[in-house]
Image 1 (cartoon, rainbow, N blue to C red):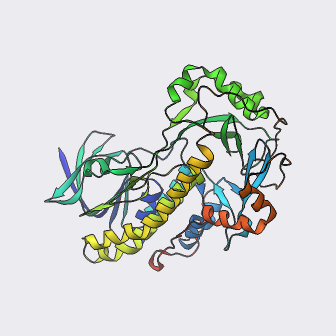
Image 2 (cartoon, rainbow, N blue to C red; image 1 turned 30 degrees about the vertical axis):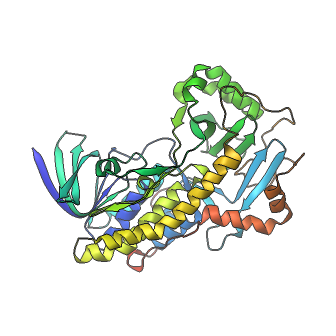
Image 3 (cartoon, rainbow, N blue to C red; image 1 turned 120 degrees about the vertical axis):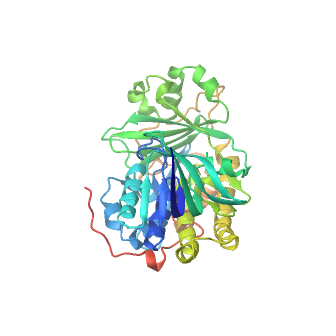
Length: 443
């Protein structure tokens, strides 16, 4: 049996963009339904950096205290550890405003918080286990979706005045709409894995760049979430070399991890992230808008994906809610305005990521033929890229010119801090979506 339903705004995807958009539109009085394919938000190895611009938005929405109550790590400096020493690249304490840090929070906690706030609004509906299988049309106009309830197999047709695709870089809606992205080649993929964290380890995180590879470790309290760069397409060949060789690679890069590498029992513990850098030429069709990763897949460089997607959602809500509230049909000119506003900060950030790929990361991604790192001072449990203690290994040897300038003139560290934590076009909550601070409900 086919079940027919209707809403004013249909949001496909319950990630950061989809849930923030749903919350804002519901607070604007729009009947909004969010479809999420999974039963919950518990997916591992998702982006977890919540930057200062998003923290400010949460304050404006009355959610700042509740977010602050979530288990998290706060980073106020960005450092990089090279073969020649540890260098500070950005000082977030120089940022304007109340938030001079980046919060590292499991994405599922962030999404639960936003979903809880949205479900308090009478015009908001979140449907889990709802997998989109097709688009609905009225002539050439997208008029909603057909979705399958994964719990009982029933199929539903949900019609809407506007459909917004927030279903990620593998967007089913984008494919069904026949929209294609411009792809920018990337030189690397990422292996994600976990390692135990000891009490004497650095706090906040570790970043290690050497000729033997590039490793980023995110502090999760009792374990490290680790990202190791590998050459694009090298996954199968490196796995074939066996897990002992991979353990040896990591130990050579950061010897103080050697006592816990046996936690990687096989390559079943190592997950591949196929890194993409893509952008749609056109983010909309009549009745349909794509935002977040569905419109522009981002590289993990800078960890800005969540915050860019959230900014897309805020701009979308501010520009489109009045039209949806008054009639439910959004003209193409308004959809075009969303893309025009969000295109240039997206393109600017992606250009920076492409530059980082070519100049910094491309030759650091590991490949099957390169295992070791140059001889030098042994790495100890010293602070790394995200350490907040201000300590670090004394630089030796040649210092790259940009790092030497940042070291000589510390005030310049505020520039990369702003680019990372705030971005080129931060978005603020519209007045009709703001609330007084809501009390924390979670320990």
